[in-house]
Amino acid sequence: MARRPLPRILSSGSAQIARSREIARTAADSATDVLHPLITVSRGLRKLAATARAKWAATPKERRGPTLFLVAACLLVVAFMPYGPLLALVGVMAAAAWQGRERPVVKTGPDDAEVARLKGLYEALVPYFSLPDDPEPLFSHGGDWSEAFADYTFDEDGRPTRLRISYPPYFTDGEPAARARIEQLLHAKSGRGREYLFDWDEEGNRLTMLVLDALPTTIAAQHFVTVPGETVLGFTDADAVQRTVPVRAADGTEDAPAVVWRTGPRSTEPHLLAVGQPGSGTTSLLRSIALQALPHGDVLVIDGGGTGEFACLVGRAGVLAVECGLSGALASLEWAAHETERRLIAANRARQAGHPAPDDIRRPLWILVDRPSVLGHLAAADGRPDPQDLLQVPLRHGRAAQVTVVVAEQFDSLDVLAEPVRTHTRARVVLGPAAPEQIASVLGSRPHTTPVPDVPPGRGYARLGTAPVLRLQVPATPDPYDDATSEAHRQAVLELLPERQTATTATIEVAPGSAPDPDADADTAPTLRKNPGTTALPSPVPAEG
Image 1 (tube, rainbow, N blue to C red):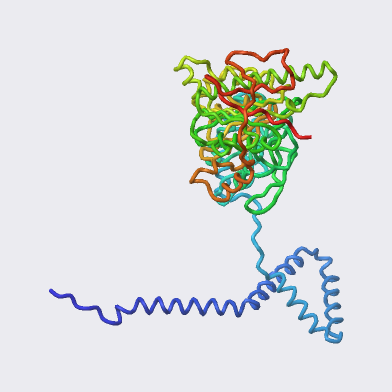
Image 2 (image 1 turned 90 degrees about the horizontal axis):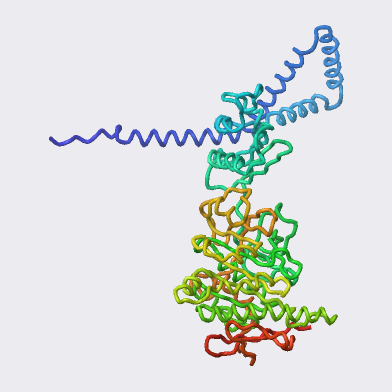
């Protein structure tokens, strides 16, 4: 049976109704715009009348007569003044317009959702901040959360961004485990995926929780304003350090708070250990350190990973060698040990003779070792000594000999590091995602912030000796020969690289396992010459001036 078409009035009725509603809505909006001043004045007159009525009701009965007489006298004076009624009308309309204006709503307290979140935090903290024998507990189930929480702010999603908590004096805030439990609870209840700073005031029994903004990743490799012996490891929070350096970022030139590592004879942290996950940026940190060290010293690079990440340094002025193989690494590190001993002997002779130290031992020598565990496995399989054993002399005596050692390793091979590396690397850096326990095992102390699971390359924590743990963002220093590197970062690294030069070797030959001759000329720098089991290294360039 064929369907009959709907009548025209029914099929087009909904469209006409919608069009009529749109016309009515437009007319109402237009009328509101036209009548907005009248609406404002009417609202103001209503507020003024309500205010006058409230003041008249609050006036005592014995004072209402004199008040009414005074108002009538004022009205009479205004009525007999030239243009008095007109000016009075204009004044009343102006006051009504001012009182009837639309004012932004000022939030004076948390809304229902924020109050519910604060109550949830309060109830979650009760088992940790209460005791059964407390006669007046600050935290109790069903208690008043406003007495414990103060100075709270929330973001657009209703999650707290700042909260000050008062806790009872008997809480063991001096124990790291007790603090960690509270920080973990607040992190979970306040929202994951953000980095929180926990500031414990043990004297005042207060804990301040603050959400930190992410460190900027727009600072690339560049010439930093530092003196010889200072290296910028990265950048941190503005209130964490007292020193800033001018940098070029994506938004222009600015002063950024820098984590500056000082090396040399007076340094208390002469060597550095960087640990991270694959792709966390430890190799970029070594490249950044090498580019900052080359203007004032010589660099020896041992690439244990063998990935060619340091190919841009090959043949550059000041780069003694870039070794990727086991034989070259062993020979280069052996030379570095002998060079450290030679520098110590030369410095001792100069001090005994009352002369300043020679120029060839005053030029800093940097030994950068990336992934030494890989070379250690190869050496064990080949029955050869571990390259880390050759780092013992530069690590122990490098501060007096102007020799600095920087080692980068991954978390999965951290237990393979030799004892001298663990003992003498007092400057520590942890990059990439890591658990608080992993960070504490490397830095010796837990960070005051909660690590986040997803971080960009070069993000982590740094600790120089016994100083506080600082957040760190390493300046972007990628491999310029990598196809995935952006053009801006590639040019930034290439501009910092020294000119290429032809390597020359000296004629002094050091065999494996031999030590420098104490009777030799102290001003002669021992280097290795090509022969079986050794690698050619250029002679250290004497410092100018």
